Length: 423
Image (cartoon, rainbow, N blue to C red):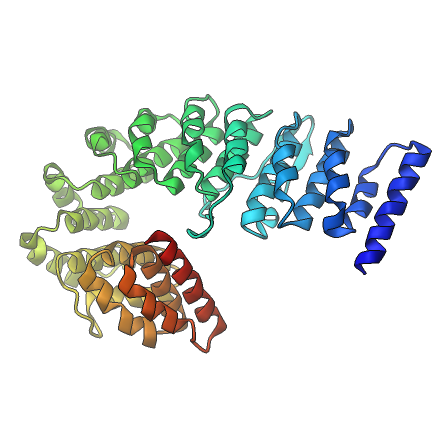
């Protein structure tokens, strides 16, 4: 089959050259069918004067995939057409995260008049595994697009890609982009900074805490908390007190809770019994990170009285943080583990467990339920230990790689690789 495809490629190339006929996108698709052997010819077509031909060449290079497609994809980012730049960007991400081109911004790419419309969503949580290290020249190429792509969509798409690939070297490009006038570019750059977690970037985006675009403002508020910018606490408190937007208020209090300070205690007390579920939850998280044993009675009463899932999860987090680390049927720690089974709340329980597992006592308590729990619990706890485990966590994770459920075994194997890369 490989020889047949190679012969087809050779015959088609000779035919095109002999007749001096312009290459058409459908010709490029035929060339791509030859697989990896077509890469040199496809790379040549990246210089074709027809934009549609160049775009199709990038698609075919992406489809062929590793291990030799990265160099031509990086080359394609230098194209002066925004659509080609976006396709090349998604191709680079797809190189490290196979399947991305089916879900990334260019998946539904279409032309409306003369402008490109990309699909940007508020659920952008994709990121490569920790053990994967992208090539520096790939990150450099994407960073250049963030700063000077041919359109705002191309620049925003590149910013998203940098975040997915955790491209720390491109942080200066992302910071530059946050000072643009385009909300999509600013938003994608903030989300990328959140994923990269370079805390030195935090103070540089604090000016966006009062941005007039709600989505940008919320992303900036979240970024202040995630990047641990303690200098932002007064500004966040001011936003909390002044805003009439419920989503902005919740984000502000949640970020204040990520930046524990005794000066914020009165804020936590004010909102612990608020009628808004998420504000109660954020207040509990603030108490959690103060780690003051004197707060235990207040939090235990709130835990007993609370019947809404989200604040109850946050209160469980707080109680475990303050020392209630036992595992029993109705214990706070078991409640968090149980919610790994919940499609609605596993996204809340998981990061709480990641943070709690940084404590050796909590971490040691997780090994038994990781071995005996449900499929969802095993997979979730493996991910927790990948992020917060230490050298002693390797053996329990390796044992889990022998689980009879293939999904659990694969999750454990990935966790081992991520943990070993981190430690």
